[in-house]
Amino acid sequence: MLTKLAMTGFKHRWRDYLVLFSGLIMSSAIFYMFEALATNQDFLKQNTSISMVGLIFQFGSVLLTIITLVYIGYANSFLLSMRKRDYGLFMLVGARKSKIGQLIWLETLLVGITATIVGILVGTALTVGVSQILINSLGLTLHHFTAWYTPAAIATLLLYVGLFLIAGLFNLLSLTKTPALKLLHSNDQPNRPQLKPARQLIEIVVGVISIAIGYWSMANLKILQLMGIGIALVTIVLGTYLLFNAIFVWLMVALKRFSFAQRGLNGFTLSQLSFRIRNYTKMLSIVAMLFALALGAITVGMGFHSQIPSMANINNAYDMGLVNASTAEKAQIAAMKPKTTATYHFKATKKVVYFQAAEFNRQPFTTIHTRNKNQLTFNTVHNNAAKLQKSEDNYQLMQLQSGVMATATPVFLSKTAYAKLAQPEQRLTVFTTNNVIEHRVALNKLAKHHFHTTSPEQFGGRYAMYLMVNGMYSGLEFMGMFLGIAFLAMLASCLMFKILSGADADQHRYKMLDKVGTTRRQLNDAINKEIAVLFILPGIVGIVHVLFGLQMFKIIMVTSPYTGIWLPFLIFAGLYLLYYLITITIYRRIVLQ
Image (cartoon, rainbow, N blue to C red):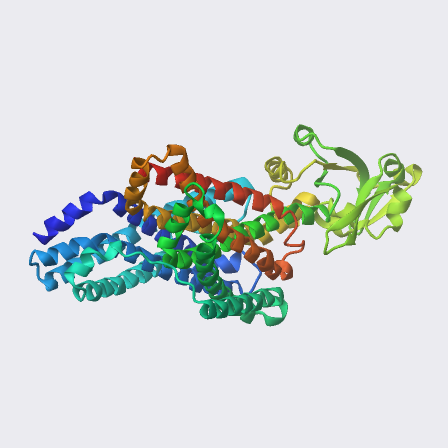
């Protein structure tokens, strides 16, 4: 009988259960995506040269576990809020508390296990899709990466099932010891914010000091090493929560005292925010951290991606050099529409390569002369034969040779002296395209055809350097972009779950406003403002965290981590705005029927 009653309640509130299930599925899916990288030690070792990357991921796992604890705690409280009234009714009609306790336990565990298993499967599918998109679009080279990783699935299942076992026990104890009448009216009690100046002032001071310590430790990671990451993890999470808990409550109370709160539905909007103020502070703190993690990861990933062509460009002025290029290979070069192309004749011994000086006088050979290697700035120098013979950068010409000739010494002779040499004459064709990455497919095909390999050790030029640098940074670039997308999805899941979980309860309030003559436009404006506050506040805090947090990457990035920062910020702002528009659209459909 109780099972039938429980199923009836489920059917009656299927929309709320759908929000709960979708939120938990996304949470477990994102946790699995992170663990698929964090627990795969072969992937971490093969795709990055940073020795402590495994420990960094362990810190990340701790942070994500904290976020998961808060998220599941809130999801469990949401499940309780849906069922308290039903369980109170069961008690009133004479149901035994032991039976209700079993029902509570099984329902909580069933929700958790089902959502976790589906989430792992969804996480695997997302891992496949996101990784393929990144690899194909960015031309990444990865080793030992797999979308399905059994240790990650086990870690996710153990964590979530364990947490739901604890949650089920908590629900059993909480509901069976609460009087039936209190359960019936539990959702009617508002959580009104109250100002406690002394306590809030202490929270603000401690929060600011904690965040300042976290920012300092990230900026001095070169000195503190791994300890700096641990300090930042604890202090920034603590400081963020304390500041939200103190300032957000004060802000809601203070805004009601201003005259604009009496205009239109501003007073209603502030009351809506105040009604669940305590739950908002916890969730918004988590959202702010996820915002910082997502934006920071994407920014760093794009930073590594942008420095790859810069590092390739300082190696050589030419993409590739071909010795005795065939007619088909010349056609392949021409198809890329190179900016410059030149052919130099030479004769070679084992230790010396002889060139005609007159050819270099007619077609000067361009070399790269770096001014500041840390900033990747350089000058291009056009050399005739005399300059090239004396230049320290003439090794760049020999890089474009193949085999033993790459380590030989270049010598430039007159036409007469050159003609007297008995060695057979050969040709070196060099060329430069407008962009190595843009033509990487064609260059790869050309290298396979001419050198019978794409190993960069077998040939020189910008493309060979690109392959080497790309292999070096692909793992870091992939981790940044992959985790950024995962954290962004988690952020959206948290915000949408928090907002939509209260939509059903808000429905009758908007119905009352509609009955007293409020226009649809005013109702839409009230919804837009309320949800905008929940998006803007963690966004501001997250951006500040990112701007300071990028200091950590100065020790591993060749270029400044702030170079081109506007692009990931702009992309992220567009995605964040899209989530906001999706959220208000769904919320309106629920509350403005």
